[in-house]
Length: 473
Image (cartoon, rainbow, N blue to C red):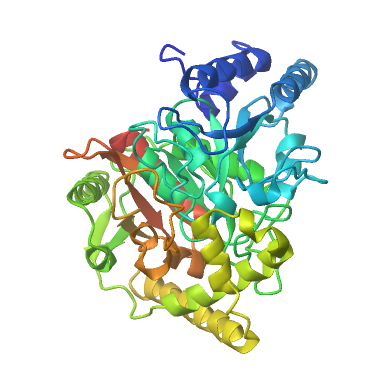
């Protein structure tokens, strides 16, 4: 830990298994990193001089869990789960029985979870150590998380809505964290903070007990410094099966996810990667364009064939808005008497959703969504495409502090989700990873790889090969 940060997930797991470090010692490293880098204790609004990644920290609980992990290692040895003893940050949407659950909102001030969410139940059984809850853009309804500072430049946003998890990882406070993604909320902070994430096939990971934004679009997902770390955490999250919903069945069980690059000099030989016209329409910044081209060239050096193709002529922004606002309004109706406590842009977002109450319009939007997914799957098959490469977001991190202002409703005009939201509509898996720092801004830029539903394993392998051989973790 020469740079003052705890090791990544897989490195930490190896150290724990070889008894080179105990879970208690790993937790102590994590706590020291938080103390050094968070910029003071957790706060609601944050300070311009602080990263402020955390809503709340649970040192006594974490200590008990770390000691239990060490006892498990002593008792079971190599039979312990891979993630046992690994410190974790949970986005402040994941319920943990008896702990605060606030969605970074005064609307839920004083709220305590009465049961564990399904994902935390799974990770708790596998011995992970809960360090604390990380900040979200209030109720996950935005892409900036302005109460948190980007560790690369505290005047900049870390992205959102999983901005606290992204910032905690980028600052080296914790080996792993969880976020959620409704229109890009895992991938936006990954790109703007320079970390990795996997948005799995929709339904791969249950969202039971996670505060929703729009349940049929929501994804629970892992965040870490490397794709390999994310893959290990995703497997732990998915252990036990996927989400069952009225709209779609859970995906088939995924094959074991890779966690290592392949050793061949051209490991991507035979892989066909498409670059579409979508990024040009999104008007990407020059720094982002450079990272995109860097990733393309790296894929080709690794043996992949890259082809330029027009994206399918489908667009469903209106339907995305109908689904998002209808589902958000249905959830937030329970908080009507406390609506004055929302931050300004969140209150306006909820108010806008109140007009989306026509069930026929909602059902038609879901039908269009299904047709959009089918059109993309046909496009992948007809063109023999293994993955699409895109910039994750068109921008580098923007100035912090305006995300809760009046009029910041997001949607089709929001450049942060110009490329990401499509993959929530289709439910396709996406791996997002860093592609260096911009020559002009000095800020992180990121790229994403996308495949059809259920094809996480092959997609993750391509991303690991790209990251470990070429782009760096």
